[in-house]
Image 1 (tube, rainbow, N blue to C red):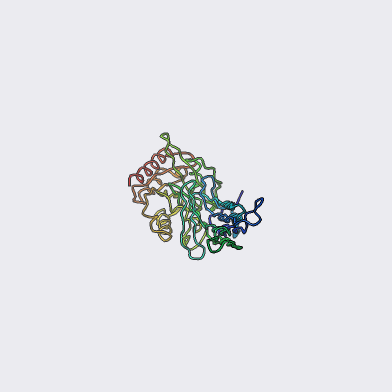
Image 2 (cartoon, rainbow, N blue to C red):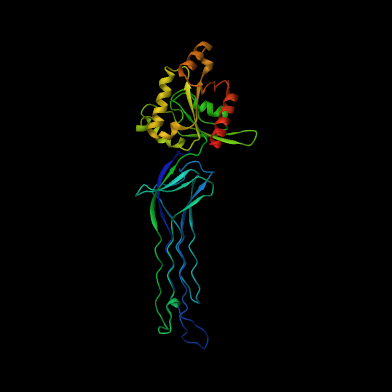
Length: 331
């Protein structure tokens, strides 16, 4: 399985402009005609283009130079050189293009086919025909082509999803994702089974599509780089709503919920302002009295008890998710 890569840096080099030609017209009975050297072609540009069929940046080689073609030299007979071919670097939708030196975000490619010209090709040089004048009939020189731009850029992927699943390791996020979407994440009963973000899709009867992102479990200090959370929190920055998933068999659910919210708030305060719902998972492992007690302890009306393993209340959850999507589209 290819390594999941959400950040990398590459070098991009546009093509140089082609050299202008030095040529003089030759024809039978005309021993020495006027200058007819054509201009050189423009160097190719380098574009970064979003492609929805790609899911991470692992196909790109770190620090490799991606080059466009140089412009072709001018030719005799006032024929201009061919422009160099562009180079297109394809990336997943949701990729930011960032200037490596300054950190400036140059582009945020969200839609399929959206592209950004990272560097522009050099202009072709003028052939000697360009320099002919009434006082200068036989120029024997031309211009070299201009060099193409060159730059080092950082590519940073933030998944495009509608709903983000947030919880501690082993809360059952992967099981839930598999239960409600077409995703098939790795599932096991131990922490940090999910080592990379997973993306699943729900398609409703009316054709509405909802993308759900499951990120590796958050632990205390994730925003400071502890555990696996920090490197993946960026993948829920774009979501419209958040589902907090809590293991009802764990201790002190209110503390767990506060911890998750605190980590999100420290990373990006806008995350805690998004619509949300709290899912109490694994209710098949507790009795009704314990379940009722835990629901009351949270003192929040946005709580739904579920069992991802048995499917209990999953249909109700799908309705809630649809409502969260409608709520967001209405605001």
